[in-house]
Image (tube, rainbow, N blue to C red):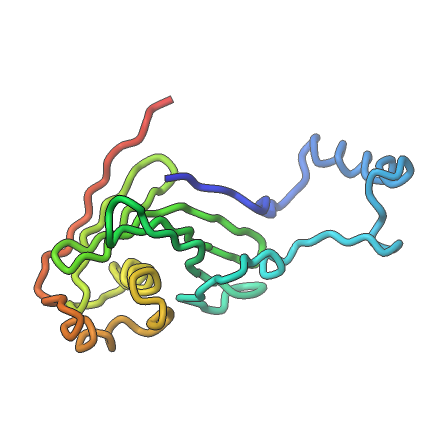
Amino acid sequence: MQALRCWPRLRAGVGASGWLAAALVPTGWLLGLQPPVWAGGSITSDPAEARPPGLLVIWQRPVAYGNHLMGVYGVKADAKNPGIFQIKVWDEMPNDVSVITETIRCSTAAPMRVTSDGSNLILRELNPGGPIHPGNRLNHLVWWATCFPQQAGKDPTTLGPLARQLGFSGTLRESEQIVPGRTR
């Protein structure tokens, strides 16, 4: 699992390095390193402009200064293990994007989402067709978007009958295991 930060977080205040960078920006323009915004150059600060092709939006809500959006893209089936997929989860805030590579298992016997919080590996056993609550909603949204892309973004509480029709019992025990990562 790997996490990738695409955009710097905005911070209040400017430290010494920020003042130095601000002082060097006009110098960069003079040297031709980057065109100024007023001369037709642009600074992309909207993460929505960087969305990857094929992004399946699974969740979106308004937050201060924009929207918080999550999606799944880059779904690749494992060649040796049927029903296992590598995916990328796009987590977009108005001023930040993070991309996490995850593994999803779509089997009826043991559906699972394997993710990371940056320092720990998180193994989540799921119960498609079972109860949905705030603690497992995102897991099910990611799982449905990966295993059944036509259901991406649909409320998982409404997908119980479909899950049972697809062979999921709806009675599996959900659990979460956290495996500590390497210490530095």
